[in-house]
Image (cartoon, rainbow, N blue to C red; front, side):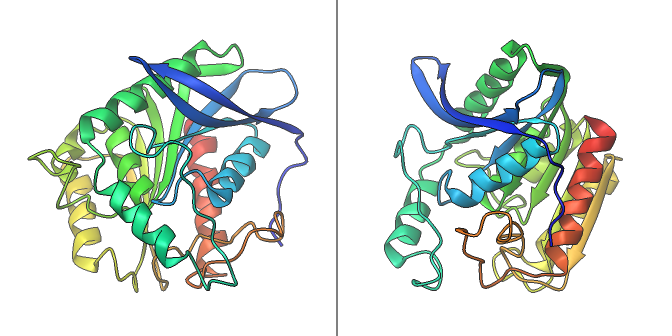
Amino acid sequence: MLQTPNIEINTTKVKIPNNGLEIDVYLAQPAHQGIFGAVIVFQEIFGVNNHIREVTELIAKQGYVAVAPTLYQRIAPGFEVEFSSEDVGYSPEGYRLGLEYYQQVKYQEIFSDIQAMIAYLKTLPNVNDNAIGVIGFCFGGHVAYITATLPDIKATASFYGGGITTSSYGEDTPTIDRTSEIKGTIYVFFGTRDALVSQEENEHIEAELKKHQINHRVFRYDAGHGFFHGLFVEEYPFIAQHPSYNPEAAPDAWQRVLELFQNNL
């Protein structure tokens, strides 16, 4: 069973301004007073759904201020698709829409939203603005890798980020070419049976991290894409486990994430 600290948390939804746009954000934070590190949680293509909210809450229970911004605010505000055991996954329509919106994302807009999130965190009286990290999954894993290039980011956990080596949301230069800009520590997580992120891709990422002497660790598991989805099913029984959930890989990866944040935030 997943062991989590017995820290009471508060959760709410807030709107963060960014050049006339209001970004919907899910905020979870310890209920007690103190100064905490902060973690930005980046969604998959399915929006800030139960899975992303659960990750945000579990991070808050570890003693961090955690925020999950909507990355489709300009394209489809309020969009989220829930994973369903009855549908054996995400519905075909939900998957189609998530992919359609993902393909409309633009690097400069995402980058601007990330900077707005960092600026917001720095306004919170309970946040140590020298201790900000990020975590992301799939689409969010790629966004986390982008975010790692910002000097404010001390720790990054990127899970099976797709397209890092080949694209950057409309830019001519793929995200991998920005690896040298990473200042903090980055952990990257892959499944060796991932049909969406090839072994060649994750080896390329590792090679670039080594080439530029980035403080990093690479974790590979005998698992498929989405192997982390469902780790918290006992804590949140309304969450359905992804068919690719791996009961050996996910808990180990979670401990690595906690180690990353504890050592850097």
